[in-house]
Length: 426
Ligand code: EPZ
Image (spheres, rainbow, N blue to C red):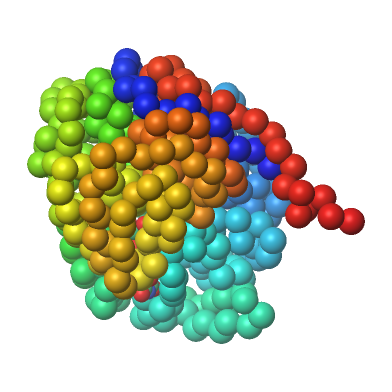
């Protein structure tokens, strides 16, 4: 087991380069199942979730060539049996995308219910609704979702709730279906647009990605391409917040500022200085930040994946901030750990009330999920004294080399191995 030891209280300063987007890459990696030729994916982040998804493809019969740490050649022509191994699927939420891609190619799929962060209920009813509308039947037995379809026919799909995964899986099932599919109330996140660009570069016919109506005309053939993944807006936002939270001065490079507009807006409201360049964002903060209330919303609203980090930054702001997470019903699990630093936060349902305190003091805490883990690292950077963050494997699911990148920004952070005594019991 590994943990981070952080000696906090030091402002971050310097430059950090952002890696490829986890939530775009998991979708694009799964989408290679639909390709009739090999694909080369560039700017793929070297993180656990991607390793898990690539391992699933390999176990199913794909041939994988790691060209360099961020470039992978994937040839899925060797996959003949659309069954995802149980123990591997549990490793990440992105495994749900094998439902749509295997159905789209084989008209059948057997995929274990997806894993991923424990943020409360993670249903897939809207995914199944889309598959049913396109012509597939589904059963769920022993935690495995089985889809079968004689054919997939383009149809009208209206999502009852805006769902990133549901939108992506509907795109996967529709891209080679017969005729026109119209997806309404679609998610508009950057990874939806990136995925549509990838599929269209292969020969798909997808219009409207990034709006709430996506039109897909089914095609018979998708050629292999070389494709670069977009930069990760959540990784970028995490470093933007870390810079402001530590009263630092950081240039975040290799980003698309438009993807970060809601984060930039809220940081400015909190009193940070944020300057946008073509492919970089400069964040500075001096003195105490100001209370800032916000509600997470589907893109282009404030992203739920930035809620733990931003709320942590507000724990030493001047005044009371009110944060509501309208996307997930249990995304404040990290607050118990945050209180160990001396933060004063009360949680009622999906709303947290954060009373800014003068300072945080170092503590020993456990990451409970990916973004919560990143938030606890930010708390450690903010706090006076020493912080230990355990269970950092959660963080490594979605952040490439986070300790190296933070060290390069002046953070005193060390990665150490430790044996969890409870696991040593014989
Ligand atoms: C994706 O999860 C991301 N994961 C999440 O990022 C992100 O928080 C989320 O989108 C929202 O932006 C990946 O891309 C791998 P949803 P997803 O379907 O697709 C409900 C991270 O930290 N819902 O948009 O699972 C659902 O319960 C992770 O990188 C249904 O009710 O999220 C939630 O309340 C965490 N029925 C809301 O919709 C469904 O069929 C949004 O979920 C599907 C979803």
